[in-house]
Amino acid sequence: MSALGNEFDWSKPYNKESDDKQSFETFPADQLDRAKYAEFLTNYLVEEGKNGGYVLNLNARWGTGKTYFLNRWKADLEKQYPVVYIDAWKQDYSDDPLLTVVASIISQLRRLAGDDADKIVLKAAEKAIRLFKVAAPAITKGLVKKATGVQFDDIAATWQDDSSDSPAPMGALGVGDAAGKVVQALIDDHNAKLQGVDTFKESMAQWIKAIIGKQSLNYPAFILIDELDRCRPSYAVEMLEVIKHFFDMKDVVFVVATDTEQLQHAVKAVYGVDFNAATYLGRFFRRRCTLQEMPRNKFIAQKVNQQNINIDELAPFIWPDISDGVHRYTEILANTADAFYLPLREVEQLVDKVYLIMKNRNGKKINLYHLASFLIIHDKYSDFYHCYFGERKPKGPSSSISDISTIMHYIDDANINIEVEIGLTPSQHFPKGLVTKGNVGYSLDFHDGYYKVRFDSIVQAQIEVLRNSPNAKYYHDQIAQKRSSQGKLIVGEIMKYELALLKPSLSQYKDWIELAATFDN
View (cartoon, rainbow, N blue to C red):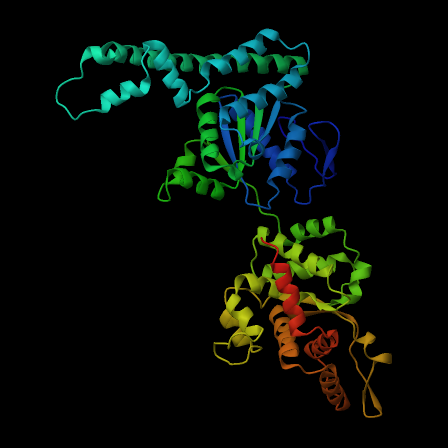
């Protein structure tokens, strides 16, 4: 247990009640041991919060489980601290980030305070909101009209008319008197806003104190903001300004969870592409903590689990053998994603496209490695894709599309020489373990099992089988010839024979891939 007593256990699923209390959202048990990061952050922020306001940027790329992390963390924080959770993206229809933050704080902390909350504190907080609400230009113009009796645009037009060296006549609009009143009105308005900020901070402090006393909680209050990087650029930037200027106060900790690279794009959308967004964001965040990206195999396992695939029903139609369990299906997709260095967003798209094809295969047998690889090649290596399907002539060291040098010419930034494990089932094709040549049977001397091969050998073998169109008998006879002379079979020979038995044509794979590709990413 930590020195502050913050020990979190995420080894079991967590059911989160919906806002309307009519349903639950289930967050599965954590497979990545992220509870220890939540403990570390909690202990750090509790100490830092004592010294004044603190804003932490929780940086997490898409697919790292940012929202999962925040929700599980929130569930544990609530046991000891006041907590507010704000989904910024759900509320960016508003033109006012300040109102979003304040309204969320009021509604969520009010529930903590209960029916007998300190009415004075509630009223003070709401009064403060009205006091320091940032005036829009139309409101500012209204202040000028109220203070001077003259339209703001008329005064501005007179000030801007510098076509003459002589001053505007004082009586025309009463500009001399009006200008003084305008300046005073703006000063008074500015001072009122500053007073409103101070009033709000005082009210927040009193309110948090009352809640902590009532609920037997501890300082600081945690305000968790999620999905800011998905908001409109102007809204995201304004919310950061709101947090910095209105909530810099002792015992209040903000955690702003973002894909920080995407947030930098939002900043540049507001201030220009040459603007130093990283330095700008550094103004708002005291520290940045980066969540580690989920390994592809675990990410895929979660996605596949959600798809509820019936592996017993699917296994007879998939090569290589996956009858050992759904983990074999997951493993094939993960190996393929690893070979092409797919980011998690593209991994999700790959898993979804494969699932879509599995539902529409019409009883056909599929080489899952080949299908997954060419779904990726379709999106990332279009030249190779078109050469493969005979729409262009191949370039490179060899004119053969199945030559490994040609393959690497097109996809040289992939890591297709990784080692993978494939399930082979020769017993299904060679009765009694014999391969026949003429009327004589020879021992195959090759058993069912999982064999290690290089990824590129699978790609190359399938291209050879599909493009050169040799039938299964061709590979059967090669095996028989070798065994008749006591030659030892290698994995590649059995692999090509099993691939030839699958029988989907080149055009069938093309149809599957391009139908799946019609679903926009």
